[in-house]
Length: 491
Image (cartoon, rainbow, N blue to C red; front, side):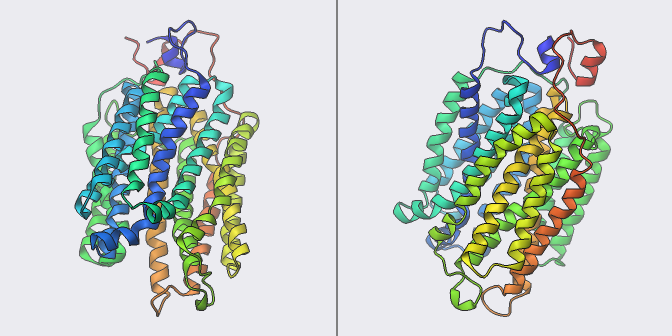
């Protein structure tokens, strides 16, 4: 392989040179669409359920199926991107995402719609592949800020999804929740095909089929148990069996991955300080983010006569999330600037503290609209700082040939955290009610749970290696030892 393959950068004199602004714009468009698809559906679930005559338990599969597919596909596609080319795999992933959006847009029954959501979830690798391309194509000194900008726009996509869902369904119908993203996916795919060159960075090895099967089985069992345990019962035989199956499959995965030459999940990489600490933070932010998606809109929309609900409409509740979205757009790039000069630990620690503080504020005071507004805005600041910092921390601590695989693990950690948070908070809200709506104590306890989990993550973040980004050395040709440590095939 060439020097570029070892260092992770295109050699000077290459026939194709990527325009940094074009690369970032196209990747941001692709990532924003996926982020929007995560949040667009949730506010419209009651409308879709009524039109398709589906029960609450059945309609929840639109979220469950999406999470399952994303959890399974993201780490596998990320590893394939490192092996066969991130641009190539990204185009395939976008094709699957487009197919899922088309199926969902045309769906006339719940089964077809769930199938479309499965295909959409399989597009979860858009994010880690995009971060990998940024590392490969942009000058090193611009990577941190670019990751911050990309993280900001991805966060904005999630916020816009929650805001736009109400107007789209009210003006048109729920099918347009998928037609609009399909158009954007097509534009992004064409732009990436012609505007971004393929990276020369490759990781050697073969496809780890046993690892992929064990990882898929473990994640499906774990997330299915977390998602449906509240409906089935946490002590139900099926729920306990799924948890047991997840433990067995993931334990077997560790044993297999430590023995194979080219593991799907490199356990040595997972146990490195730069990766496991960000994974802990990813789980915590997954709990917090999905917890806020569940708690804040519900609190805003509960009738005012409950004494703690604010009586807002779906559209008004979505507007309350706009300041949080704006905060992400502003502070995620700032996180990249801080990373460039001080390293990723400071912005990640600061973001974790601010996000935890937002939940403390909401736990103590949530009776007035301005209190909720301050809480969610502070949350947006914390998420903006931390999301970009987590990615930059990983990029600073793994080889170029492991970029997509490592960032996929962080995306997976957030997905698992989101499933855990949703399950725990739903259980708390349902347990603390003796009426048809959750009691106020359920919201208070849930906010404290999110704050506590973020506090635990803060101590993990303190163990993250400190200092500035370790820029690759361009001045010398890599030797055999360098190539071997990077996992690069010299043939």
